[in-house]
View 1: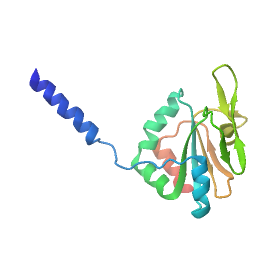
View 2: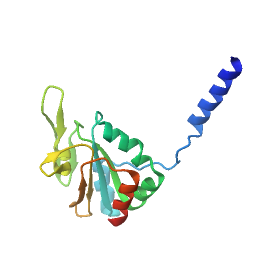
View 3: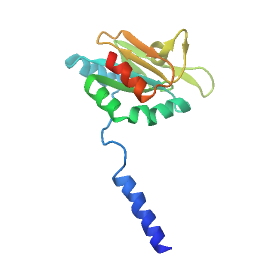
View 4: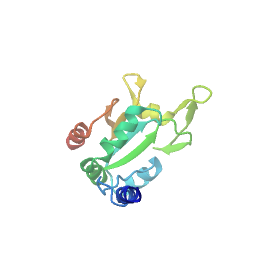
Length: 157
């Protein structure tokens, strides 16, 4: 019994200290940080609009955005923003302050999520929005994207 526990302990701690996934970390910027560094080094921006309760959003976070090729491409060629559409702090972006707008007792949506994520008149999750250097929307997609699909999209942009 002690040997079994010891072996399980070694396996468990090995997974913590030596995970099997890549060592690459996805750089995540706030809108304010992104806008500031954009002035020095202009790049297109990838904005992942999601909520905590959306299972497809969480799956995309845990699969698509954990892919080493995606991480490397985003870190090198884009600025990436992981944006919770229910964020309740004010966000200053492109000389405008966007606010959280309650829609019920414990629900609401951020104005910036609505501005960037509305596709065909509706906001759904997850939504991927890509802005060019002039803050123009050059791509929007409002469904789950696999690693291979996102990789193809990013390479074309």
